[in-house]
Image 1 (cartoon, rainbow, N blue to C red):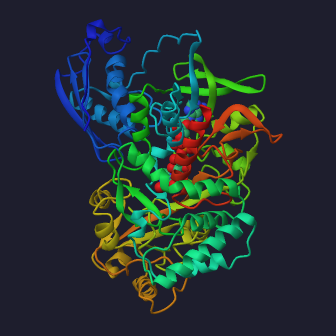
Image 2 (cartoon, rainbow, N blue to C red):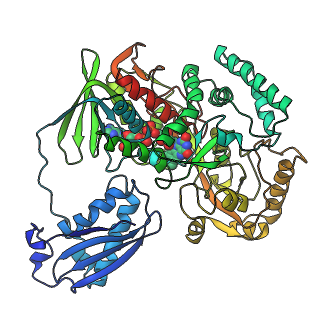
Image 3 (tube, rainbow, N blue to C red):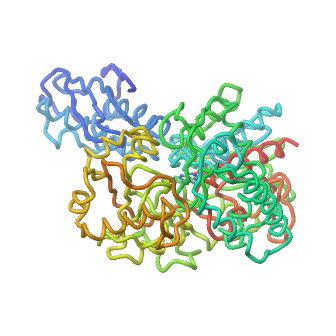
Length: 627
Ligand SMILES: Cc1cc2nc3c(=O)[nH]c(=O)nc-3n(C[C@H](O)[C@H](O)[C@H](O)COP(=O)(O)OP(=O)(O)OC[C@H]3O[C@@H](n4cnc5c(N)ncnc54)[C@H](O)[C@@H]3O)c2cc1C
């Protein structure tokens, strides 16, 4: 809960010519409360008024996501008092919370006797922004305060440099703070403690039987074969894995489009990315899971020390940066990378108030602006593999993911690779980001795809189903034993059920009825799945990742869709995160990390690989930028 009190003396304010000037009483003096649904439950607002003025606005309760919702909670109450209206724009990046605050304030003001017209007058215009260019200098300028940018900033500070992290939004965190919460890493202690069904090894054997695409793949296959021989000889039953299997699955799962040198770095560095975050104060949950499209049980989840969703992947770095002399500057949109004699020397752009700024880098500029999943025009321009990616296709991305860094990089002749590879994910259905114990059913109640498939296969299969949607089924093994009543993004499962986001039933028949599917189909689908889990028969759809049978009530179903999720293409980098030009040469002074880059995930990203990517390559970019 956050409490923000904005008690402003109205006489000191230059009030717009609205309520106070009307001469008539607008409100019945007093303090009133209103509530409206936010993202994480109700947002409650208390409003104090005299006859003609809104004197104070306070957010008294809000279960919103810290970081994401903070700017709305910090700004809007004061703005309502300053402008004497609720006809205000939402704060960029916090649409849900902003709308909830404005709606709750409206409800409170209406109960004070005000008319809708009186409280929705157009706000007076702000004084024009200063046209004087704001100038700053630091050793390294990082563009983008998401996971990759803040990780890079940590490394710049550790190397003794000064750093300015510039973000266009009102809050830091980018898509990272909204992330589902899986980080893939092989052969960690957490993973070693997990068990797997023997049928899972068929997956490994299938990868070993593939003709090697190049010398990297041949080497990874050889090393995995040795590990597998030892695993079988020792009669082990825990999760089989190694960094080389992680690389192999990443490379094969991305259809060999990735740069194997970057895949090598990803596989080798993933385990250390866990300790990078732990050293900054976050903690890992003891259960290993299989994120949707991860294809293997190596997804690590945070314990949510810093907050829900992806907070633990980005707030630890943010706190380190601000405590150690770095600065995170919000509402500054970078528009250009400044070049001098072929070298990147700084950035220029415009603040949200319209003021121009120019920041100079003594050493380097790091591009960490994320992907372009929320930019419909760009995704339609580059899409080659999906029938349609226009605005009717929803996205999981925050509005910040508009590909600005790619446009800026192109302007200075940086090379772009893999731009046509745009990932859709099957999401929005339910409370689990793992497929380990969960089933996909279509509207008729039939399974239609092996749930441990790649994301492009899952999404393609969903788009072919009646109504292009699916039901994501979970049971109490997932809801209680694994997730302990909490959804992957930190909400209480019972709250999601209460709000209608997920359907709950005590029997499979009841569940089938509630989702409008044929109970016979649902029962047959679950029976076949359970036989495969117990090793009594092969899974009819070829699924190989199993954990528990689907047999523990209560049962749950959430309605899911295929949504634009990740853009695999972007700026070409080498192993040191240096940005390469269209001529194949290093652009001096310019580094890039995170989803703005291409070449790491190839044609299809394994679920859970992006968080490892942003930490590993964010660290490299930060270290190299100081050299
Ligand atoms: C809902 C969701 C769930 C996900 N779950 C997972 C998961 O569980 N596991 C996993 O591995 N991956 C997951 N992903 C993918 C992963 O989260 C992203 O690929 C990753 O966080 C991208 O990090 P980044 O630092 O590159 O970009 P971001 O975190 O998006 O940060 C980019 C920042 O740059 C800023 N910016 C952009 N343009 C400008 C500009 N012109 N000027 C200044 N600033 C600018 C943005 O405002 C933003 O803050 C998920 C993605 C989404 C959307």
